[in-house]
Image (cartoon, rainbow, N blue to C red; front, side, top):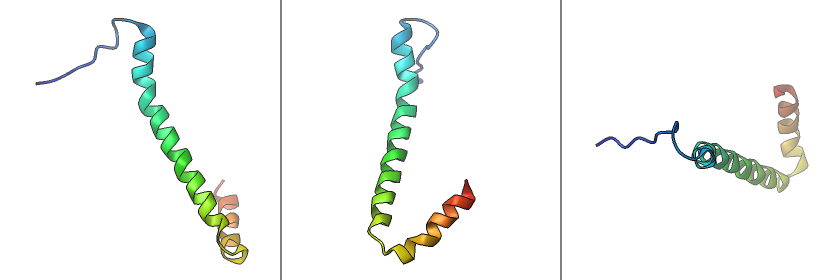
Length: 60
């Protein structure tokens, strides 16, 4: 049994929400991960996370 969602018919707003929700959820998860990582690194000694800052500088 295949269940398909037809995105070409029906209300536009409803279809846009169905398309946007996975992207929004992924963005929220990534933001939560980065925030957690930032708060965890903040708890480390400055001498330990200094190389991580330099690595991020060269990464960008």
